[in-house]
Length: 564
Image (cartoon, helix red, strand yellow):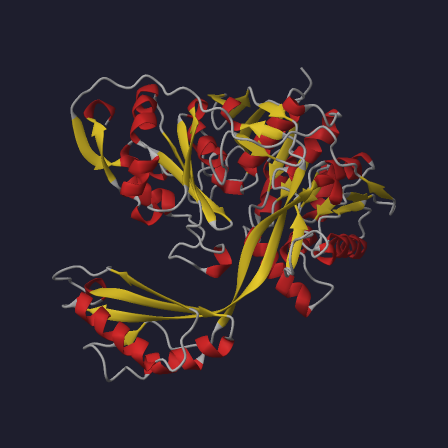
């Protein structure tokens, strides 16, 4: 068998561990090092950065990492692929060249562009957003690598594309090698979020021996598309079937996981242990990609402000009702949206003042900053001597802050330019796929045979089930998995959409779709509209739904005693 290509990751988001690039380059052998710096919120941040400085719009921390590590990468012959270019990949490529010159290094730098559709937003029916970026695939990266690039920076490609590109270039895959590409997409999906594959944010973290400083992951990808997820020897954290399962369930929908180059069938992936800190992913099938490209659209939604009242001791509900009525009557202008949330963090007969207190949050939103500025915070603070006993707040009043709105658009793939700019400056147009297939839901699999009736015990779901949750625009997903076949036979029947609404009342009344993934012993729920207009709008307590899965695990449910 042809030797595997070793592709590591050193960034899961803009702001991830700065030392990770050096750790990955010095910790063991690699062929490629990749980094994912972009998220929906990041594109908004970079959009505002570009408004202030037209030469900006890229992830500056990537340059800081390269200043420390570019010489090391050259010495070790590790090629680097990252989407740190954000809204300005050409600008970042130039900055990398200048850096290499200052360091006295001979480095071939290339970039991929075409994702920025802002100038054509109106023409494409995308409105008037602040940013409009199509999710590109891997073939521009492939062309740059084949042209000899040592460093490739991109704009908005899919997270997995920075891993798929090196694998496809290394093995010489064709655009129709769907099973191979799908295998690389799945491997890329596992490692693109960095240490989430090695125990970070892992439901069963208490079972792990060393999570103090988890190592970043790498994928050993083979020519047939199978892969082994692992990490450098001696690093913290753990790679297990559980940690890989958790990351596979992160921010997905149903069985079909669409990418610009291939639709990966997540329901075909099989995970098997392959030694200490090694998990093999095999069996992944691929299908032609959809005929449309997803577009990340970020806009300025308006202005928001908030004030948090601290309610201490007795009569919490009455205190909350009083100040809510007082503030509502005191407002001379009414914001477009007012949201009140009472967090009952208080405990009876508490031993500290903090544990005797509840928090009443009032958040407001409006297109007009004046309506959420002093016109809101002034009346709130004026109640200080005129309201409930013990009146105080968590912070002084502030001015309204701008907030963003994320939406997803879709345009024909053929309408999106995809250009590889090689190290010598040659521009190569990457053709859109012609073999496409409309994305439809997969046929639901058969339910497993239910367990026979037996005695049950009321207990937290998390005693036997792990969960991972996250955001996709205004929607969220919660993936829940178990570790034995008998647990799966119970979970598939017990955790229905109706039961989810009972356990998580915030989901009641929202559109919820359940997807079964038997190979992973998992169910995945997609909950629409629970995050309002996306993470930047701060529509709920947990705007990215990161804790939604852990809330679900904490809820009590009747579990067969034999499974506990």
